[in-house]
Amino acid sequence: MAPRRGSGSYSSYVDDNPWSDTTWLSLEHYYPDEYKPLFITQFVFDIISLLAFVAFLIWACRIRNRSLPLKALICALISSICCQINIIAWEALYVAEAQVTMYYLISLMLWDLFKVVAICLTFYVFWNLIHRLLGFIRVSGKPHAAVTTIHYLLLGIIFVASLAEWGMCVASYVRSVVSTLNADMQWSWTQLNVAVYIIYWLLSLEILAWGIFLAIKARSYAFWSKSPAMALVAAAISWCAVCSTLAIIYIRYSLMPTSAYDWPIYLDAARTIVQFVLWVGTYTGLLLCCAKWHNLDQGPKYPAPDYQSQFPEGHYPQIQQPYDIPPYVDHSTQHQAHPHHVST
Image (cartoon, rainbow, N blue to C red; front, side, top):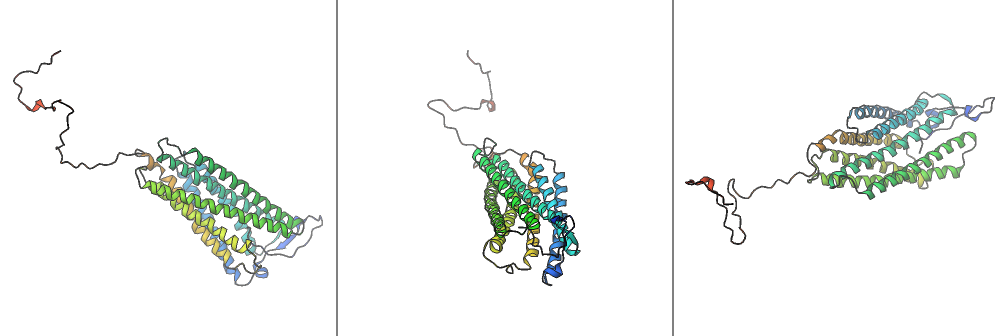
């Protein structure tokens, strides 16, 4: 769902272009007085999140292992940066109490677009790393074909559902400008938005299950280094928390019957802070997994078990000889009076 926005006083232009109408964005006139410090807190943490994403992007560009899904991870970070730039621009208009035309809604459309792109790419990065780690526990060196097929089908479902949600977002904003926003369209957008976040939540649980499975396998003989798998499960925990937090909030305050005043005034700021912490945990885990990936190639995939001998050094059990073959006698330690001739 897009950020909540207040109404404004409009003035029409001569050309009757509804997008040229102006509105005054101000917190003092459309929100309670106690909401302004919370909005400023949200604004500050969005800026901090932007700086964190830029730092993660620099880190990702410094990783040299190009066999990993680093391009997708870099694109996800760029999308997150663009998402933050658009939401910060929208918030800055409220802080500055600016008078703007209705074109400012384009920033919210782009915010929603870059958000769903970042989420889809993050799912792809998780599943790609899972497939590569699964290759280390199979003799063939590749994950099962059914696993990759199912994951790519799920990725397609996520992409289509996210694209449909963004289309409803654009249609709703355009409808609110050119005419009166239909309540049925608003409710359809809300239902689709909640459904998409529930899908995100369920698939993040699937990723967490795979992460726990790989973390258990990393403690066995299959991996030379445990660092990539442990970093991946840490990222999966944060990612599952991100998706579950958003799904629960939207189910509670968007899908369930509530009034307009049931949305707590502190929820936007609290959600921004929690998302900042969880997104940092997600990308830190993914980048650590990629950075430590070279440790997996420093040893064999299946190192020989370290058996401890039960016999003292130099003493071995006598080998039982079959049938009537006499045991081997080491003549090298005996004095040889005559050379040993071998008959042909």
